[in-house]
Image (cartoon, rainbow, N blue to C red):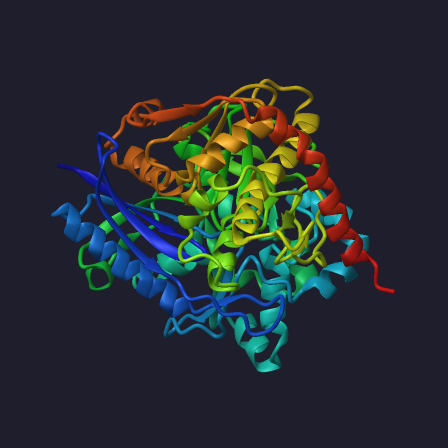
Length: 496
């Protein structure tokens, strides 16, 4: 039995899947990742703990499968950045997570360069992306910057950090989907931008080589995972999920509901205009080649339910939210805008903070749980509207089924509510971990387990959710949702 190990290193944990040629998961391992919040708006991870979660989850999955895999695929949280020492592999600072907002003031200073940066990168100037995070890391200490300029340090997103560690420091590489999220990568030239590196004070020599997503990233050494195997496929988590949903074809759109929610649409070889809160990024074509995509990023989705559990203590588990949502007929006018780390698409307001409106003495934890789930669906409808406008009525986002995945989609109440809000069919794969499956697909095609991308997709099965009797009420609730969003924006922008 030939299998692939898919490493899915996410924001709140690491999942490893061992997948066979029939698309069956033969082994699974998971380890949660500790979150560090040193101050409001700051989010950090321990890079060594990230590596430890990968090691433990991979070994668990391989033990369950009963045999080592033939190849490895990697997918990862994207904009999170690590800076480390080349000689020892020692991190120089905790990883700055994509949710981290410490560079908001620096981004505001760059307003006059926003058009230039957008033209080069397809991105908006926001703390979300890696460039200002890396700039901040290098600006803390003149000696650290000098070491970077001498080539003693290396930097990269989480894929690069894992590739370096898994190969014993032999390979310092990334690929286009992750590179396109750094705000240092030129979309047209498909290369690091010397102009952007100069703007952010990032020495070009600390950045990784950019290799094809479906290709050779070296061989994992046995002392890390317990076996040696080639790393043959790498992509950022959202692009991997798009590939895992069959999104190598132009026009296909998917939404992943994880810590945040991310809607991507494959635009093929023609760069889309973007705008309206949408980003232009790189995705994978059928052989892993770079193609353009539009992306809408919702910073907080499943993390809102996690906050209700861990921050407020009103849920015993995230899974309890489904039963609570079903226990009430509506939220009774309660809306939760989970801008806990700012607002992403389509509003892009870094200063926004979480807002709950409509509370009364009759409000219960069930209403709050339902409001958190509804927020995911309403925010998705907002970004789909923006994507419809950008796509000028393209059928991929105008009445066609929306493909969804991610841990939150195991909540069938949420998926049905999403179909009701959109007034369109929502398709969910039987294996909702499409990020890991996408990484498995890339590596498996490179390894010859599947002859091509359609053969890989043929191994997947989908459930369909059609709009139901709750459609009218769900769609009517969007007016209140937008009113709540306006309240959150007004709070952020009123500094009187």
